[in-house]
Length: 267
Image (cartoon, rainbow, N blue to C red; front, side, top):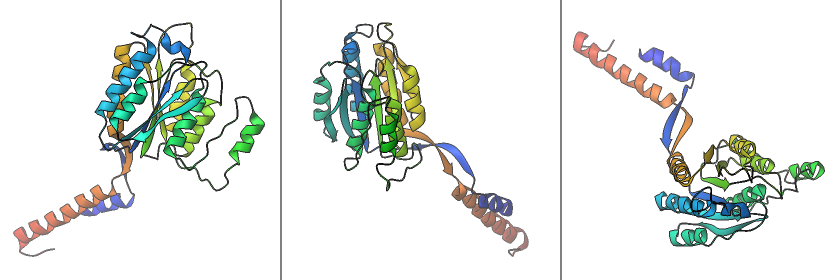
């Protein structure tokens, strides 16, 4: 048995298991476009998003730094990542509605908050020449596998679709290249503003995050509770060679003990 397990261990087996995770930084990117005043989510979309965000902040470990990004026609870091919960909650409470929606800008500003020394510039959508220039702007940068940067994550909430700014999917590619996961949340059901679920799903898929939909305030609160659990415990494909080696070692010791018991010597 010990020999068989040792041979299996040489193959470096792996399994998907749930492990504790500790994100040092979480960026809350919140849509503050004018459509967030809609009342299909009570009392309105923005107020419901603020309430859910406050509950999420309260559940995070004190060691986790939280930043807040607000985006409409442009995006701004309204609260740099901090462990001071009072400052985070104050930033969430002071969000003001603006015009237009730039989801891509929200992602880029969130990335800048995680990597202050890096530059994240994308041209407006439908500019392929500028995109090619951007792709070769930093020849020294080496992409990492999507989802591999476990020290930070972005949670992006929006109720509409991009109307200005860079392509959000291209912005997501920058996040994926740096291993940062983007969890996207779509909110609202009103037909006046179409929720671009395809783009939000693409952003989540590219970055190895996950997409959530919330049609009301209760759903939105549950989404943030689910996000909390996903940031605390993560499923990962992990090499379990050490486990096989431990079983093999235990089998050898057991065999030696039985040999001494039965034959007064180790065979």
